[in-house]
Length: 226
Image (cartoon, rainbow, N blue to C red; front, side):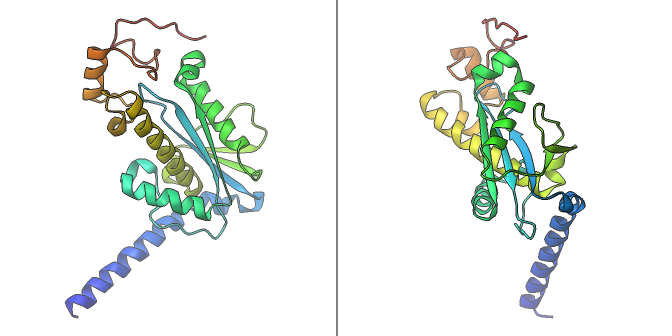
């Protein structure tokens, strides 16, 4: 076998492995196929010290094939951007919900996440029959829900929502970095990196910091929402 043939064979083997991985991520979609339109839901930004929490809801066609789709945390930024465009192109419907840092401080991050997920659902152009959620059951939603622990790595629908939510929020934080320089939002996306915490201690909080998240790093006190 020539080197060219070896390279071709390796590429084919990698492609087959990828197709097999994706097929395994369609297990929930196949299990609940008879339910009708299936929508994956996930969020990005529950843990950062600054910025909003973003949720996405994605309905993929049954025969949809998106190579390398995976939990957004396992992908490079470049791969996420490419997948974002492909998902937007191939999905039957995409919805996004955004809840601000001030609202997070008012009602706590879990309730804010639920609110963002409901927004994402309400912004869909089609009404799903079944929701596959990453680990949670969303209150005040009448559609049947299936919570899946680590669902963004187990379901193509949730993985697609994970990518949409992550890229949407990352782009927002890159823009916010222009308005609030010095904290490194374009790179850390508001998460508590060492340089971000150092800047927070040196400069104090800016307009998009979550006051209930930063009390250990500043002299400010924040009222705990009830």
